[in-house]
Image (cartoon, one colour):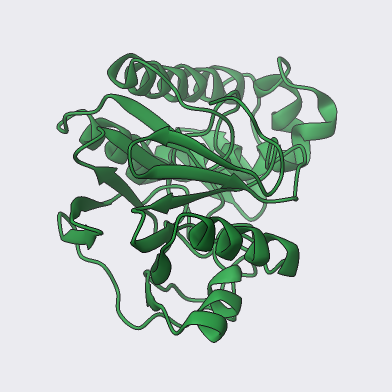
Length: 279
């Protein structure tokens, strides 16, 4: 299950396979996970980046199982998750399902779904039920999907193995993110299948940890902010994320801003131009 060889189809559960895209990196881990659901009539969940090699690997795995690709489902439209949908649809005519959002500089402009999912909708995947769960926070058009027979929750970038998710305002919202994490606890989960990395056991424990981690970071933001009369993000990040490698501070500034915007909405912080202060 922990085989992340690019292009190799690894079985995670009956009717569920993972193919890892060749885009490893600091933010993507071993690469983006594309999941193949079903054997005869196959759905690919998160087709990944616009990479011809990856598209060929997905289609090769589908054909090796004697099936055909009939459906493409996306968790969200960041460039490492959805662009391969266009390549695969062109080759197969598969139906594309996913939500769109206004361009914020980070969205896949090639993405054009045949329809958008709705919260708690059941999508048929080769006879199994795939439940769409609206999960904004990382970005406003994010959906997680629960494969009900296996209990696998496909989380895209809502939960990742080994790292915390970057929240990028305005499409990303910290309150929405925390609320969405809590919403996952209402479902019967056996494993989390993230967009990057391996399966995560004890889903309820992981989700509870992530909520507490974000709230602990929020408390640290408020505590460090109190030490300044006014402060800019690039200075505040040094003390709030002093436990993170400085090379990651540019990315951390996005999540820091998301925390500050949450505090602002709650009447606990205010900004004056590019400066922030505690109320």
